[in-house]
Length: 108
Image (cartoon, rainbow, N blue to C red):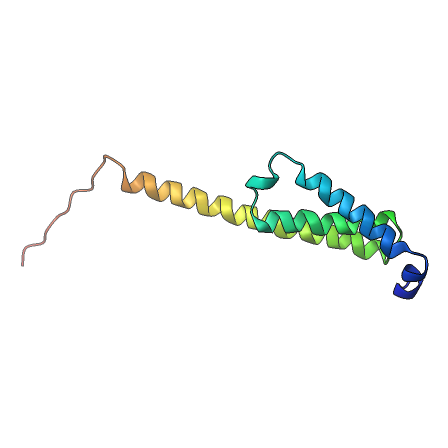
């Protein structure tokens, strides 16, 4: 189905209504307000792709690929955040460690 067919059949309107309903449901989640803009955007983009699939607008295979892509981007961002958090925690433990390495001075 192409764009002209979607507009003529009111599928764009159907898709928009369904996508907005899904996004409304997302915003009601207890973690929504605590989330940053990136995870919110990823979830909203995924909701739009789901709405397209359910209303048969566009290429379904591409929509599934888009969902996977948005999820992978978010997953990679979380992995990076986790790695950064682990590194910061390890660094803080070393800095705050009571064990001190003796400093030796070489004779000149």
